[in-house]
Image 1 (cartoon, rainbow, N blue to C red):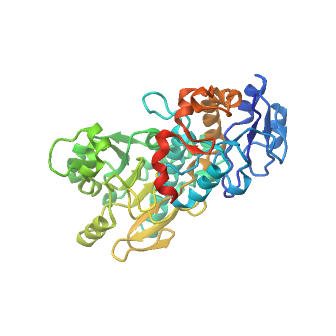
Image 2: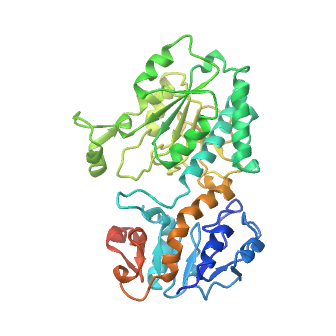
Length: 433
């Protein structure tokens, strides 16, 4: 049986998450697994809790056949023939992580990526997405409050703090609920009514963000009902309106033929965005879609430039939780950090200013949102990962992947097996140069 190691996270000061909490470690050590945990002064769970759960606390993970982490591991720490499980951020060919991937290949390592652990229907099984949505929506509403205040329009959202500034998720939810109560007596000004939040996407990330919205007085509407709502002169000011956009609302075939979801997945180049006319009805856009360069953008910079030149937009803030740089929302030009989550993008000049003041649209583009809720997000992640952890420890990493003993979801998530790209990831050769 392989010994499992849990690496200390050190990508940045806010990264306090873990792949396995002490409770998860306790379940595994009770099954006879050996687990070694690197010490950490910033982890959301202290070393003593891991020791009490049966883990060995040690700086050196060299004795561990399989090492688990959350974020990328520095290339200098890989050892010959080792197996590593973490979010590698390589499957889109991210240039900054190609040296890491090449090093893993040179050393004959195995790489398993949580992002690709899926069931037979392709649904992800181990993820932080819901907590990205929770924290992302809190930080988006915080940005809304500060942005409107900078424009001289006070709202109840000024009462909010950033997600990481609350002691836990429960406290954050209570604060959102209190803001909702305040909205009854401090409604939106007429200039902001109706206040509409549009969610691009409907997966785990979006559902987390929607949960935060639902703590406020709210109504859900269909995308096709947006124009009539915005045209109302008596639109309610004591609530927010939410609308969820599916693929069929976001894109259309270039040739004008009917939308078909599988066709869109198979041939995204045949489609164009149809989001701009709907975006013009929104106060806030929350982007929660999976995107690659094969797919059309939701909003290009040129779209925003024409829009902002022609009218005074209703749009206050974009919360780009997906945070693909120059991706689905092209004016997502950089990733921000939890302590400084926002900047203002000016479509007229293609320039940005950190903070919430200035002409243009406020952007919330933090790319490490689940780490703002480290204990809750780690607990949920552990619950999903524990069933696979024993298989990781008991697998045979000396032969072929098919004979390894790893369950199918883990085999599907194996990018490298003993230094070689597995068939589903052979396309990544083109990124390696």
